[in-house]
Structures are given as structure tokens and as C-alpha cells.
Image 1 (spheres, rainbow, N blue to C red):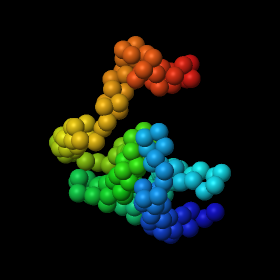
Image 2: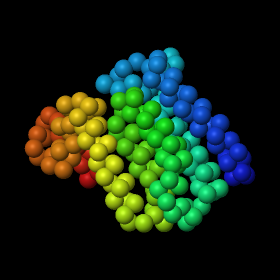
Image 3: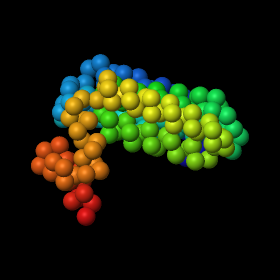
Image 4: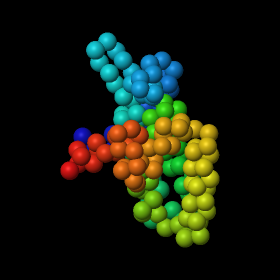
Length: 173
């Protein structure tokens, strides 16, 4: 497949993925605390996984037209931030923090190739810390707050809140 077709269709695919995320927020049933699966009879679809691919296509289109090596100011990251923020924000509204963080990490890989001064990164870090504080205070449920320290110290509560982290470590070997 000619890669230019992906570039041409990226805005439409991205818009459709955001629409699908919106539909998921509106009509999907709440399952285990999150609302991230659409159910069509025996078929279940998680639109956030499709939206991650759409976000990658849209970011690739943007950076193909604006090469990362040419990005030298934080304001040059406004549109990529909006692209990533739309996807991650919609996933957060579904209360699926794991997928939201993974999607944010995928979007952040482009930052390795931009040439922004260190003092600007300090401003970004300060803003990120402020956002994390707001999320910690107003968004995260108590069980989510207890899981974060459990990733670092799973022996703290191995049979309750740290159980998922311990099972992950067992599965990985």
C-alpha cells in the first residue's frame, strides 16, 4: 500500500476514532470501573486501541509536513499536543488510565527528535507536575491512588491493592 494513502486519510481516520471514543463514552456499559468497550452481541471492541493507531497516523502526517528537527520552540508542539491530547483525554474520560498512559507514552516518542532548549523542557516538566497534582486530587479514585505506590513496592500489600502488580511480575518472569 502506498504510504501517501495513509497520509491522505489520516485526518478522516483520526476524526472517526475520536467520534468512536465519544460514542463509547456515551453508550458503552461500565465494566470493572471503566467504560471502554463497545458491545455488539458477541463481539466486543475497544475503540481506544484503534484510536491509538489513528493518533500515530495523524502525528506521522504532522511531522512529515513539519519535520521534528525543525521544531525549536514549545509552541511548535501545539498541534501535536492537541492531536495526542484529544485521544488521551477521551480515553481518560472512559476511566481507562492504563491505556491512556500507554497512549501518552506512544505520543511522547516524537519528543526525542525535537530540538527544544532545556529551559523550555523545565517549563513542560513543571506544567506536567501541576497536571499530575490536579489528576491525583480530583480524578483518581482511592483504589487507583493505592496502586501507584504498589508498582514501586509490591510487598506493601501483596494480596490486595498490589495483587495486579505482583501478577504482572510473575507473568513476565
